[in-house]
Image 1 (tube, helix red, strand yellow):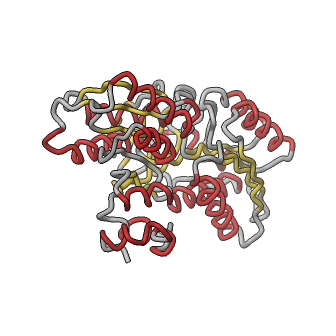
Image 2 (image 1 turned 60 degrees about the vertical axis):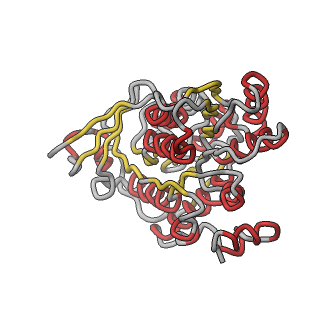
Length: 366
């Protein structure tokens, strides 16, 4: 079996992509030895990190709930809690899930390091943990996310494409995500791999809690420091922050410079239609959610993950964790139909409602 490993920025995390998974490589890969066999009557705890990013409430929660029901003949129950970007609250929520004796946890950590003790507490209580979207520290049993370094590289390459011949020597601003999110470090790594040596980074920020208002304030500071005529483009790690950035650019009278994004939020897609935002990264949340639900159900029932998890992930505290890495696509005005519309994220009517109709007509989105 061939294996290739690559390092990423969050601590010593290594993802090993395997052409064929082997149960012998990791104790985590076979849960049947440590979990009693159960039927469809299972309880799945779902802990999501915040509700400012539209994806969690709009996509992840309902999709996971639906898939758990499908996999358990409508007998499985999903118990949900959202931490609202509060790491301490999320630790309390894990305690509550342990007290309520859920069979398995799907966990998207607010702070991937601060949650480690709670993950161990769940493990000690016999509760399996699926790290969802972010690689939490602690003795996790499975992981699913996107190739986050590739996400950042995709964004960086798109920004260079938008700048075209003007890229060399241009000055940009980089608006990275929260320092408490391991994914943010990986997005940053990927973006720098594409941008370094091609453009000058005039200002770079790690944006507290991913909040659009914090990105807005950072962007105002960058404009003040660099001058409004000295910024050729902005790397934004996600769509929510892109909205705050674009508001600051407009207030300063800056228009027609490319801004990146991620998550394909409706507002982000609409800004792409109008040309205010250049691109987003389309990530198949249905696929990620379905994988997380399938992993959770199998773990709760004491079944092996061999049939679905062909990858391996190492964190600072867990080695050889079964993983599924979902691919990503660069979303621009040219492929809206082939991405978010085809996958049922939005309809053309939703995207092109009201003031966006004329812009949609202009790019042939009708």
